[in-house]
Length: 435
Image 1: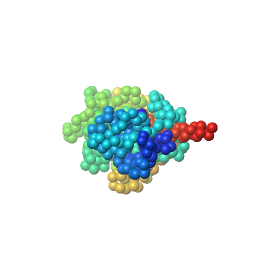
Image 2: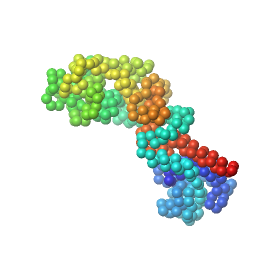
Image 3: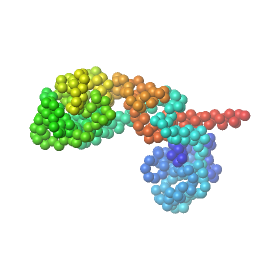
Image 4: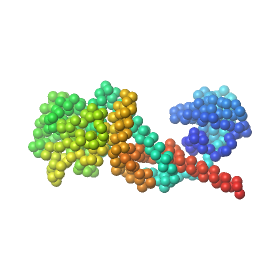
């Protein structure tokens, strides 16, 4: 309830047409202040007019006024700067640590808004507002989608900056880690990143043009060359890795980190690592390529590489599969661009204050079809359809950071639904007054 009161105060959604303190003094909210998510009063730097006098300070919000004492604020000097105590029930007076009384303002939560909030938070579904989401005007949804994509890219940018700090601002190394992770395609993303971190990019570059050695490095470090060889090709890789491991003093991962269970054959880690090795052996997918890219098709060309014939009949080392060329498909290439190229390109523009690169990252997302996954299909059923990867990335952010965490109060769609319910209360009150 207190969180809802904070929300109502922040956005001025209270039902009261005229605000007065419990003593009957008129109250005007010039500025509700900045919400505080840490210890201390709920809102900082508010400006309140009480009986004609303007006060600047902090605002504390509780359901009942007695919670002021329950929480020990009457003994805490940090709350002496509070100029207004906002509650729904004033059962006892509140005082500062020096004994001075604090003005109380009782606000009333609109009944329909409370019902709407209870309805949203109580629903145990992937998308609580699915039945009502069409009530929100498309212009508000579009603005929220743009903000969500920015949130997602900023979060990924922080991850890129963390990698830069670890690798002494070496963009090539950072791009190598990001690209390798993207080839894990979700289920093996973490394991592929650990692989890249355990195998410096310089060792890959020294073998460029020699696909067998690059495969040996990747498979060996992934722990997929341990034990007896499955066939001549596997044994050749073991022999190459044995030499390279000693030369570079490498320490392989535990092969059990690589997951194949309940994974489609084309996503088996063995095949994905073979494709990644071919990119490094035959392609030019370096960081400079990402910076120079003129569109998604140029990036696809860099990823469209041929694998050794062995992989025409294998998805992993343990058994033979039907004959088929195992190229990197269009959807897989899109995923690599979305999860590796776009974040690094956007972060590069932010880091060096070069907005053209950040804009190019957004253009890449707009040129890629929407991803096909659970969040996108869930929102499509509710009436929000993604037109490009720009939209699908925004919807993933919305699902993971708001819907799954029940942060409806902080979602603009939730806000619009609450606002609509408040308008409904106001309209109902008006009809009653007109009778």
